[in-house]
Length: 295
Image 1 (cartoon, helix red, strand yellow):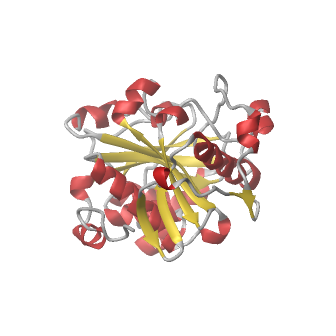
Image 2: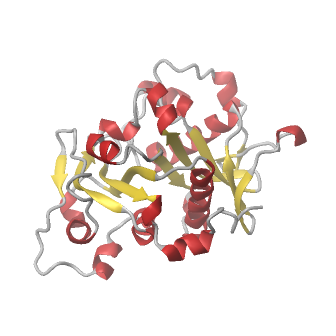
């Protein structure tokens, strides 16, 4: 998962308290017509767009707090507990993708372009993995880091995940992104519980040696195949989080090592997706101009 630290940020309490709630979830007022945001995707009552104000970013951070700290019981420091926000120093440099059902925020994803990462001092993923081989090999491509994804329990389904992907794809097309990456998290801190998934990833979805990114932490877990015969795709996918399965179907590759994140109670793997290698059926599904789900 992702560590969180709000030290040094100006998160004044009045701003936090102005974010209204609907059914215990962050809710946003309709912006004035002159500030109407661009909708990146729509499915039924759901729509996805970027946050356009500080209040909206705070609402996304509060949703992340509810999922990561209240539901998943991540380790919480005093500042995070005081503000009830999952926030760190990268947030200021990121775009924040929202999924809304009416005025209710039901999902969010954090997007960090390479040009913004330079101002942020690097990518968040670099706190867990050494990205140098990947970035060097693909230095001709514009990069986008994906992180801090979460969806409220009642909306954890294929439609919401598909809409998140539609928003990411539209954003990537707008910014000419060629390489996307981030971390996918397995629940718990016992890698042996995910042995089937890790073995299958090792055999069928590893990055090439010239691009592989090793762990930068002391809690490294190799994804080496300890099972013989290799587990079937069906059994392996049963152990994988839905978002990771979605990226694998599109054509993503995985680093050869995982990292145990004790703060968030997860085991993280590096996920890498090259736009040029996305399976053609998904390009046809969303459209080269990302118009399939546009408003």
